[in-house]
Length: 227
Image 1 (tube, rainbow, N blue to C red):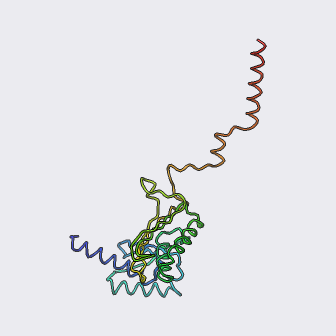
Image 2: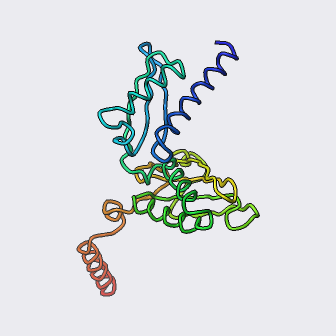
């Protein structure tokens, strides 16, 4: 595959992903992955609302398949739905939700929206989260606002387990950038120390052993004093 064909191939793939996200609705789709097989194209859509994406009796999936065949010249697209159990632990869904709320409620309420979303993320069980909003939010001068809570790795190997995403909100003040970083509850961090009963048992000596040791020390001191 030469350079021009490869570029056109990637442009068409990006166009397919953007169309699926815009057609199914902002804030419903986390990610769209395309896998190429000998049988055809397998399109995996990650969403927290599979019922709304599929539609009644699969109507939306059928319409989407027809458009992808005719408009984007896919041979045999097969759409699979991957359900996201908790939308508040998915960075892309959270970023899109913040963008939607800022467009509806206005950019002046960005602090309320960010703090509320941060609380919902932590309530869902995340170990840490960070929301960064940038643009002309409170005034005509562009500025960045950072909202964070909990534990969040930013550098090194543990930073790879952090889920990151970006979105944009268009309002009267212009375009606002949104960055969301979430450390999920099941993330494995090498330098994290969990203080549980097993760890406490290694360092805490049972009371009976402490008493026995004290008695032994007293008896040995008495014997040494007599001698």
